[in-house]
Amino acid sequence: MGLVVSADDQKASSLRRRPPARLWLFRCLAILCGLSIFVVVEAACCLLGVGEPQLDDDPFVGFSSLQPLFEKDASGDRFVTAKSRLKFFSFEEFSATKAAGTKRIFCLGGSTVKGRPFSKETSFTTWLQLALQEAQPDRDWEVINCGGISYASYRLVPILQECLAYQPDAFIICTGHNEFLEDRSYGEMRDVSPIVTGSFYGLSKLRSFRLIRQTMLPESETGNRDQLGADVDAFLDYKNGLAAYHRDDGWRRGVAAHFESNLERMVSLAQRANVPIILIHPPSNLADSPPFKSEHRSDMTPQDLSDWETAIDAANSTLKTFPAAAVDSFREAISLDADYADTHFELGRLLELAGDFDAARHEFLLAREHDICPLRIIAPLEQALSRVADRNRVPLLDAHQLLETETRHGMLDGSMLVDHVHPSFEGHQLMAMALVEVLERVALLTPQSGWQKQAQTSFKNHFEQLPDLYFAQGEQNLANLRFWTQGMADGPPVESRSQQKAMTKKP
Image (tube, rainbow, N blue to C red; front, side, top):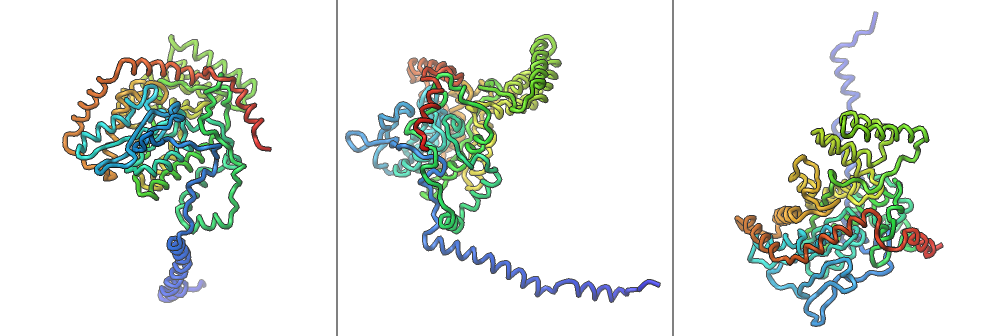
């Protein structure tokens, strides 16, 4: 006969197994006491002023020299763009002493900020100044264009540091397209996971963590970092510059980690100075911009390559007569080599013609991601922008999405961009109008009602005053830019750049 346990016995046994409430309270207090040590250490670091972030030094690269972007004019009353920087930047000027009632906004970035292939007169920075003046006319608005041709995020950090001395009221940062133009190696950072870097940036907000890192971990020697020149030295400035680009996943990971680090440094510098900062996700052409260079996956066998070529030939032979069959052939080619960027682009074009716009956009994005010469921002950099904005609670204007909503099929194309990345006149104006609303959210202005209509009138008047020569020069710049993206610059052979770097590299 089995042992019979009464209900009362079961209840008593359960009570004996269950820890009393006092024990649970003791355990919770023990955990809180342990955590309180970290709170006390963090508070002590704040009081003593230790564990400050080291924002003045780039942990990834160094510069042979740094030249200021602005210098005082002969009178000493105004800052003007330094003559040595006019090769990359537009001319700007502003008073050395900011007048009462003036709001000064510095816009940093690459050629999109500069307004290429035209110039600052039709950049979103000029439209922004015009719009702000209409939105709140009782203020004098200064929007300073600090857009440098081919300037990547690591070259923007020193500019932001410099501009902190010029009484800024806000910073606007638009960057992400130029991160792959210059050569850097990154060493061990090539293999760091984004999950690790995300955790690191979260912890690095704590002074106690920074103090432990500074005191217990040896800093890397400056000599081990890549040393960059004062001016941009882009691969594509050399003849046949596309030859310098090959698939290198480790380098891409290093570039992404460096990009996120630069964004963090700029945001931290601005926040430390109590200056609002706005990030912009830059737009890029998906539907009308083929990849600049495609390469097969590294482990393709001769048979794989032969099968891939057969599928591509079949697709090309039926493009006009039987597009549906061409879609199947392109998909077969992608199944053999999903890394070849141009195949995704061609498939995307067919799917767009067939009206399958979601699938087409997916293929266009894959074409951009697999581009061996990434002259358009790629997904890891877009994700870094979002992470930095979320971590630091700073506004992020998605200019890509903003312009894409204006396209017919929801894929950003030549209707809003004049080439692979640069917005049209209308695109720049849309960005400016959206930025006014963002600046309102950060309490920089209180716009009057009806300002949007007045801004459009101001835009029209400004545009009509631009001389014909301005547009002619812009068209010539656009033609030159297209040659540049194809590796057809008239500089020295790209091989000479690699040889020169090898000769000057420290042993």
